[in-house]
Image (cartoon, rainbow, N blue to C red; front, side, top):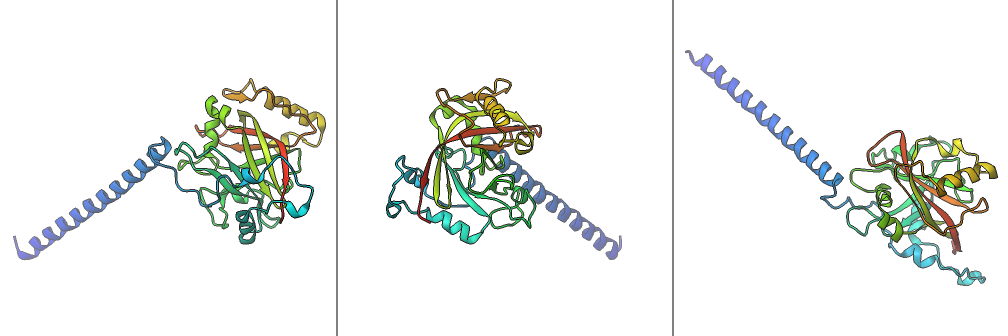
Length: 282
C-alpha cells in the first residue's frame, strides 16, 4: 500500500472518530436536558427562581380590614408595583398568592399582571414576557375584555403551567384538599388599591373562552357562572369552600391555567371573591 493510500485511510479514521465524538457530545447534552426537564416536572429539583422579587408578605401587610378615612394615613403603594409600571406601562397590577412556594416544589405566585396595549395582539403576553421579549414562560396577564382596574364582575387572569413550575404552575396545588383548605386568599395590587380575594372554588373546566361565553354584565348570565363555581360537580376534580357567600353584587377574579396533563380541551380555574378593597397612596 502506497503512502498516499495510507494517509487517506488515516484521514478517514480521524474523520470517523470525530463524527463519533460529536454525536456522543450531542447525545450527552440531550440526555442532560431531558433529565433536567423530567426532574423539574416530577419535583426532584427546586423550581426556577421567579423573575421578579417582591417581599412575600408585602400585600398581605397592606391589605388591612380597616380602610383609613384620612388620606394622609393611607399605606403607600407597593414600591415594586410602581417600579414595574415605570419599566413597562402595560403593567396593570401585581398578584401574590401566599403559600404557593412554601413547599419548595413550586415558585411563588408573585408577579406583575400585564395587559397588552391596543397596538399589540390581544394575547401578546401569552407568548411574551414582562420585557416584551418572546418567551415560552410568557407573563401573567388579562385580556382587553376586562378593565385594568379590576372593577368588572369577573376578571380572568391567565398564566402558563410550566415544567419549571413558575408562573401559574403553583395553582396545581389547589387540586389537593389540604392545600385548598389551608390557602384561602390571594392579593392583587393596582394603582391606588390592594384587593383581597377569598378563594372559594377550584375546578377543572373546559377550554371555552369565559369572557365570550358569558355576559357578566347580565345578572342572569353572571349568576349562571357563579352557580357553576359554587357547584362544579361535573368536574373530575374540584373543591368548594363552605360558608362563602357569592352574589351578582360581588366582584370575582378567575385564575386560569392549563391542567397538568396538558389537555388542550381543559382549563384549571381558581376563583376568588373580593372581600376587601384597601386604598393606597400612589
